[in-house]
Length: 392
Image (cartoon, rainbow, N blue to C red; front, top):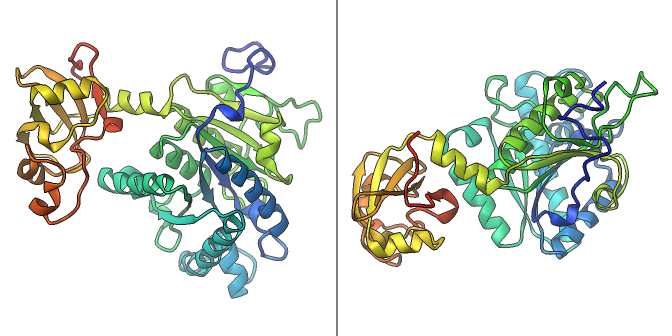
């Protein structure tokens, strides 16, 4: 038993309150969203979930949804027989079902005056830097507009070799990409148990996991429902991704109505804690894990602005060195050549050289595109406390 292990805190550690989180990703699986017998959406349950989301939205929180269900819905619409589908059949079913899934989310959130925006992603969108940045920017803009991004794997083009295979891990990638504070996995089960609860009546729910150890991983089981691709094992994998990226995660039952309100009211669930936060985890990654591809030299005014927490604008850049692409890491140096920080550049080297020293409104005229106002956004920039970032 793990009751006294450091990785598990069932009673001693106070679980966080839902009220403390600003940006929340909610993952909804097929087995919760779709009635397995009828092949249709569980409308009453989804309406109750939408009411929970609307409450968070009214409180000023930002909510993202990772939703399964496109293949199951398409299968129902096309009246395909039960049993395994071939790859091209799954892709075709997803193409039909994705339209229905997007409409369903748009309507159910629209009942509460909330706009939904659909984003379809593949594995490469979270692995390749440029595509990652494009997806991150789209999510950020939707949140700026107070819309709710509804995200799903693009099953119409994904193959077995280039797919996540389950939306638990996809949700964790989305959470870290969006710098979310919290990831909620709504599941068939209300959390992680120290033994299989279906076969062991003495199994106990683990309320808080402080760190994911080998013992925690050993508790994971397999998928428990026909429509679900993942099981507790994939949820543990998702927790590792999320907590490493500075995002707390919890597993809670989605089989009840108003599942998010139940969490807020202290309902049963398992919290996976992270010692970091999304911004510090991301900046640690930028500062220490990425090899710089170039260097920007900036003027004294820009140095002062960066140390005051501002973004780096083109006007403050006086020199560009190196060959880099948008999204690459670069070193930022002051006019005395001392290293000020490191960040992810928003422009290719050629375009950056064209707009250096120019005001942001000039970018459109020079490049012929609106571009970004910042050469490096402050969220993508690490400035050393003494003006120096240690080498990798």
